[in-house]
Image (cartoon, rainbow, N blue to C red; front, side, top):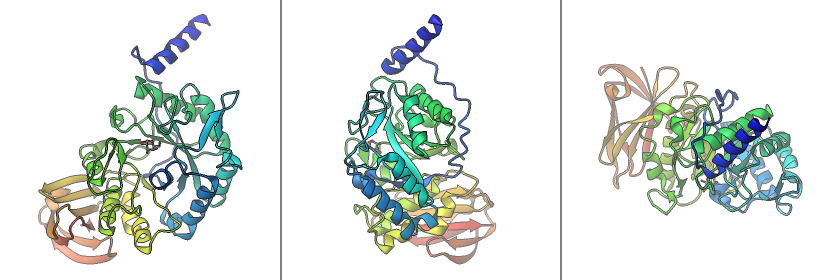
Length: 396
Ligand code: GLA
């Protein structure tokens, strides 16, 4: 018994302080059965930051239905940081009583009553990124609480972790979630620091591969980067994604005002092609028809949700012009012709670059126009607007 207590104490001290090598928590496989295709939903952070409340979340759940987002496949409504304020005498996490007067369980029930799923946020460290209480030392207690409330999705952040070992810490919460017996999507928000794609397949359902996205085409702040930087950081990671375990280049900024409609269409097309989680981050209650049409584009979403679960890859690049391709379950390829440059340009996809014989005749369908373009042998060329995409499906 004493030996067991000692082992537990050493393990936890190591986890908190990181002063000795620890075996990561042994979780044989993340067999929670969820996120077989990339998760789709909405999260409060990109638009609302800490300004969250039960009224906001309820109205956003309503808007998921009225805007057509739910019908398009979006499911999860996730409250990010700042819903929590303290712990009670027993160590239970306490929601902000001013902003969530009915409590989290009632809010989860409301979201479920709309046929949607409910998500929350916490952090590996002793405090979240916004300095609210984190889960360190309370992992099993928090996971059990989430399950009692009816949580379906946990985003688990990485602030205030000091020298904590990421693999051990995420493994611990993964085990805690598993122990609840409730299938909960586990979204690891570790920013790619410890290369989670190399070890997290059996730990989480998705893992951030980058720092925070910023609502701009190509800008840089200390911890945040624009769309292009996050996109480029995905190159080479495609083999690590698959059903139940996805690379996450961060949530969508579509509709938040910092990019043009053309740029948002590119952002959405490429996230779809990357089999990235499609987590909208805008105000669904007030979005324009153009933004709604981007977020709900059926044939683009179908590429993201394809059952094969392959992440797309960049297969050709010359200067500002690129071709990205994703293999689909039916043998077709979804292809994004992408123009980063300042003027419209022709972009060509060659069949050999997407794994087809050079002279194959294939049908080309434009997924934004929802129109067949015709049959083409060997390649297809389209004029692509500055900062824009043409997205097609190539079917032999
Ligand atoms: C980090 C995460 C963001 C968001 C904030 C909340 O920066 O990467 O996605 O959750 O914390 O404080």
